Image (cartoon, rainbow, N blue to C red; front, side, top):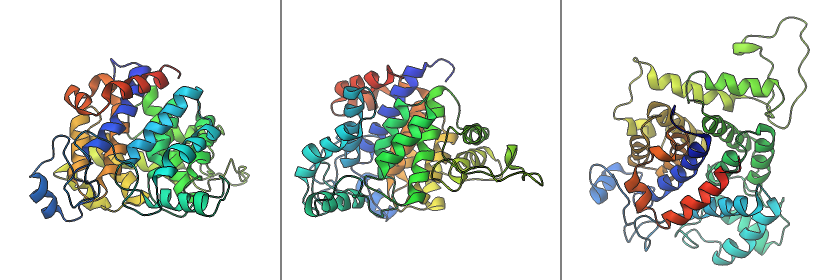
Length: 357
């Protein structure tokens, strides 16, 4: 990281997420690891075609899933509008994505449409609800997968970052805990883009942003999570999130990654430790752990995320962004950049956003 620039790190975060998505396209959602190994061998190391009977059948190695499609849509909106413009993004959903959907899982760009997007489609298209009344109850990372681009764009503006990510998240997911964890991931990513490392000190830096009213989390403890002194008033609530605990998770995972008494070997088994399913509370600890353990090795981080099975697409996207922000675009393997479909266009788009920080 010492030799990277902020623009390089921002570009690396965006492209790292897209690479993670594409690497998982073939071996996505194998909960039976024996079946995964049977179809793809002992170690997935590159882009692969999905099997004919799997979720993304018909797509080819190096292409993106619908999560990557949505991230690219967000990136295009951010670049064209020079920032987050919710009306523009919603218009793109209405005119570019929703006409390709029919409300069923196995439809739409990328070959599979997630629960939160299906629910938003039903509320928006079938029920004719206005945006703002379209969020459902999916407890997944789908909002993170697109709003990570907002986190990159506003890496130096934590208040704007939190507001924009929260506002975009509730378009598809309305649960406050999901929203708070989504905003927390964005705040973590923003510090990495600034040049910080995912380590034991990172959560303390995030808590300082809470204490200075720059992140909308409620906290009553003093520095280093010490109890308040007798007579201290209850601090005013800042924003909507009752607890700052989502900001503490990354440093606990970073501590676990370097603790000699904690062994997860091989590292892909982090998916078993924290869980293979899609829920955000399974995905974030694993992504933070891998991004801290392999903070300077993008390929190792994302490949362990992919080879852990289950919802490896989300795990690899989130890990890829976090590690790409630490290594910078200059630290991404050239073969993975070149193997990504439309690599030149996506690199140009990521660079446009990175230049505006």
